[in-house]
Amino acid sequence: MMRIRIAPKRGFNFDYVMWLFTRLSALAMYLLAFIGIVGALIMGARQSMNLADLMRWAFMPEVTHVQNTNVADVNAWKSTFWQGMGILFVFVASAHGLHGLLNVVEDYLENPIVRKILRYLVIGVLVVMNAIAIYVILHS
Amino acid sequence: MGLSRKVSLRDALRYQGKGPMLTFILHRISGVGMVLFISLHILASYLMNQSWGMNIGTFINHSFYETWVFQTIIFFFVLFHVINGLRITILDLWPKLMEYQREAIWLEWCIFLPVYGMALFVIVRTGLGLGG
Image (cartoon, rainbow over all chains, first blue to last red; front, side, top):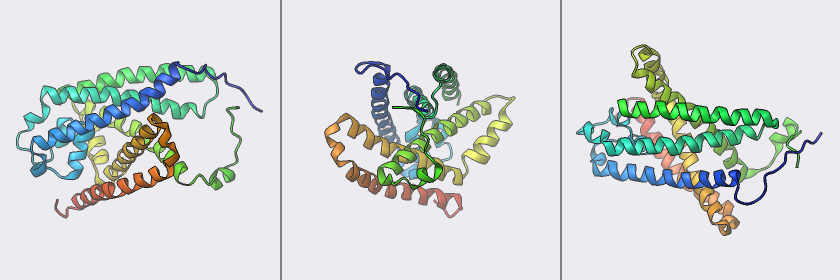
């Protein structure tokens, strides 16, 4: 039994925008990680942490990620700049990640109502998780 | 095109997708894994800040998330997703390069294996308490 799902019109639609967003947010995250690595090296990461710690910092510039290393001054690693970079990273990464999760799940679903419910559920999860992540960044 | 794929498990396992299929599957697994584990990590870090959830948050973060065994898994997910995603982004935004997809996948492994190997070496050596 073959069932047919109406494909959206070609051109500038929601699916295309999200397809482009996935690629562009990926590029944005490479830039954020690069800024994280350069910033860590400027703050003396070469003497005070190993490769794994540096990568952990690059993927999320959050001060608890360097608390087990030998950094001289922890306060430099939780400045407003790094908190802002962390929040930016959370926004980009959560949108990218939850859209990707939805993409994977929708590949195995065909009921349009379930798909619509799932989409709103994911938007709700996105808002709540972003709020929690920002709270964690600002309170650690 | 229909959406239902009635493919038997035997056929699915015998599908010879080779390199591109392997990266496709690993990209999906690593992406879903990252969403699940990083969400868990954020929730645990939130609980660690609250007096009512400090114990469970500390348990998840210290006894599970920050163990060296789990770090090797999450590092695999993140690094593979990052390097494979860079390949996908470059080839999708400059479609003329799609002709060289297989070469790009070989290049991708040539970058991934040394970087992951170095991180693995550091994590395992630190985890076993051999210095570092």
